Length: 154
Image 1 (tube, rainbow, N blue to C red):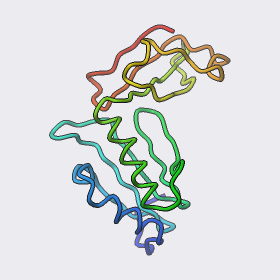
Image 2 (cartoon, rainbow, N blue to C red):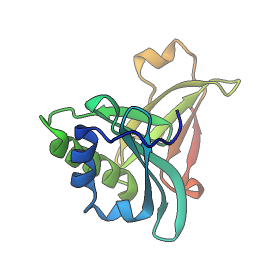
Image 3 (cartoon, rainbow, N blue to C red):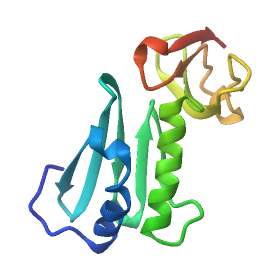
C-alpha cells in the first residue's frame, strides 16, 4: 500500500487525537494510507536513531510493531482512546527499557519466533513451547538502540 489522499476513518481520527499529545509523536511521522487509516513511525529517541516503531490504525485496531515483534490492541480497552493508552504504555515500556524483545533464530539464521520479556527476565530467556519445533539456536535481546542488543546461544 502507498500513501493516500483517502479520507481518514473515524477510528483513525480518534486514535490520532488520543496520540497527538504524546511526547513521542514529536519524534515520529504520520502518514495516511489507502483505506483511510494512519501510520505513525517513530525512529528517533532524543537525537538517536532507533529501530523503528510502527503503529497503524487499520481495521479499528492499533497494530504495534517494534524489535521484530508485533501485537494488536486493544487488549482490554473499549474504544480508540483506551487502545491509544495501551499503545502508549507498551511503547513507553519499550523505550524506557522496562521490556525488551527476544528474537529466536535457528542455525541458518531463520526466524523461529519473538516475544516480549521484562527487564528482570532470566538471561537468556527460554523459547516458548511453540518455538521449540523450529529448533532455535540463538536468541537476540533487542532494545530500541541496536548498540545495546545482546546475543546468546539457546
